[in-house]
Amino acid sequence: MKITVSYCSLLAILFSIIACGKEIDGIDGMDKIDGIEKIDKIGGGDGIHLKEAFNQEVAEINTGLQERLKPIRENFRRINSITNWTSIEVEDVWETTEGGEAKYYYQKEQLEKIALRHYGETFQLWSEYFLYDNELSFVYEKLLKYNRPFYYDSIAMKENNDTEAFDFDKSTIFEVRNYFENGKLIHQICGDGDYSPFSSDAESRLKSEFVGLIQSRH
Image (cartoon, rainbow, N blue to C red):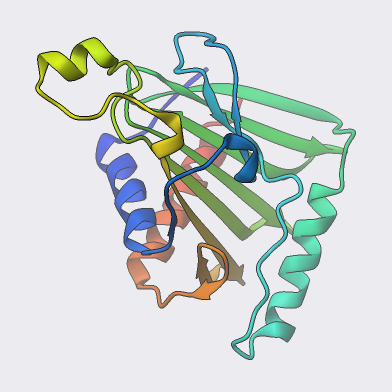
């Protein structure tokens, strides 16, 4: 089954993450950025993948929300500690020419997590949706924005009188962590731990994406 994501929705995701205003720029070696790996090209992709946030610790909270966020963090760690899933369903996602995929992780017939990946000519977007009692609990988003399209080599650079070709080490990383309680977005953290004020649009976007993924399952 193929999942088709609205182009406008995809743009909204990208702009929302960038607008969070926290980035890691000027990558000096892939091994220094958690969650990034470079692999050989497969399936027409660009050969660079964002890895899942299996060991990604939720950032420390300094806003007085610790008690409300505690069960969200504990659930996050519980799910990420699972190594033997009962089943993992994979669905193709098509919006860009590079495509993408959604993975549904089940433990004893209970859906615990959805991992969504979008490939683009100038970016990769990785999102993880964590469930608690069948409701959205936590969303981790990571955007890898390339300095140029992945096919933009030295020849294209010269033809366009440009000064840069595609260079993975010049990519920019944007990260956003979103905390939900009883179906409401109650906290958002950008980058390495800065609190970010958020609008109702952020909550609507994330919930709409989540509902769409749930409805698109087999």
